[in-house]
Amino acid sequence: MEGNQQITSKRQLKLIQAVKANDDSVENSLATTSRNLQIINHQDKDESNNDYTYVGHLEDFFENEMGAYHVGNEVSNASIVRHFCSQMKTDDAFYIVDLSYFVKRYLQWLHYLPRVKPYYAVKCNPNKFIIKTLAHQDIGFDCASAEELDLVLATCPSINCEKKIIYSHPCKPISHIKYFRQHHVQMTVIDNEDELFKIKEHWSDAKVLLRLKITKNGNSMSTKFGANQYQIIKLLKLAKQLNINLVGCSFHVGSQCSDRNLYEQTLQFARKIFDLATTEECGGFKFTILNIGGGFPVQFSEVAEMIQDMIDKLFPEEEGIQLMSEPGRYFTSESTMLICNIIARRTHNKDYSSEEEEEVECHTRITKEEDEKDLIRKADILYYINDGIYGTFNAIIFDQKLFYVNYMRKDMKKEEEQEYKSVIFGPTCDGIDCISNSISLPLLNIGDYLWFSNVGSYTNSCATSFNGFKTKKYFFIWRS
Image (cartoon, rainbow, N blue to C red; front, side):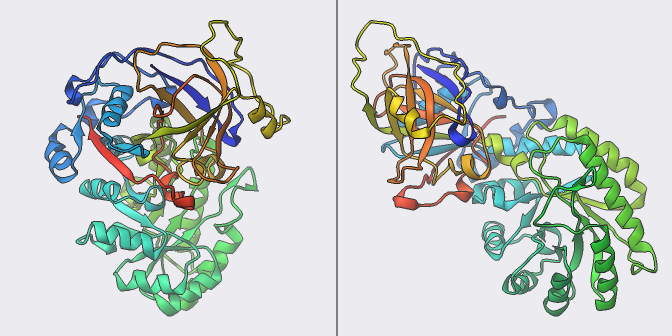
């Protein structure tokens, strides 16, 4: 028996009605796994499921090089999860990754933004299997540190660093600057005068992009990175004096941005800087590269069409501008599921075998005024799982991510549907390690599973090994 609930950031929940169905059998082969269970979740919509994203021709790569299991498109996520749970010999948490998702997203990118070359933002999910799969599609990489560069080089030792890697951090340690130059990376980004002096001294042959500050209706959208027009003009003049090779502009509109006006204003600003740079007063540069950054929403098509129209208008193809981008979540967000084991449970002295019905508020909004400890005290059941806030669920705090929890019983014959006010804790000794302080779930047992979709971005990349807990096990699948 399975179901799903919505977990929101700050662990204050708007609960949604669970969708439940039966999964009647589990066989050794995914091809024969029961397929009659569908967990409904609007965020699971895969808009890359189109003819132009067919990847059947990559069977050899997925299965022989990457060790992935082929799964029919009609097989539900719940059936896949149950299959791999049956293969686990321990009670450790694990991930299931759809490698074909990365390729389908790239093919979708080519369909909607054919002029823009993507450079995957390694920081989003720095795993070798992602880098190898994307490199197989001839995608470049956005590296922000020497360690990220090392990871790409270790995974793709024959990569052309001059063309396939950009060092896109605007504020760089000198040791890292030297390291990137040593490995023949050419492109980088700056947004201040001191960085120009560092480039002059330690990387004089770099191709440098100016990072633009994003504004909306005159208000700055970024305080950490980016230069406004006044600062850009000063940088252009200084770069000319230092004989720095400025080649273009870079910007980042922010995560999950679908704001047409913001894209339009920013692209118009970039066009203005391209034109200013050509003037004698500002150095007489001929810019040839525009980096439109990352932040693309998972639901991509409408935003992409809008961006493509604006680019064609402001930077027509005959101008010969090289267009690039740094998507991260776009490639990885919906690729991965996390499966956790219920390792412990505490009940608040209630007789759950009673046939008396208990009213459960399945749609109660938890307000900010309610004390978290009081919510926990009022809970009927406390569950402890083997990943938490110090691990994958750090995204609740750092990224304000929404998670959806699905439950899966080992005993498929158990059909109790009554729900109880529950709390979900992570595995560490820290009291802050609470994934949800109020959620309605049926009575689950130690050894049952909670699993979570869409955990591919800024989750394990930010996880720690605090208290000795970190999810490290991966299974790979692919769908044609």
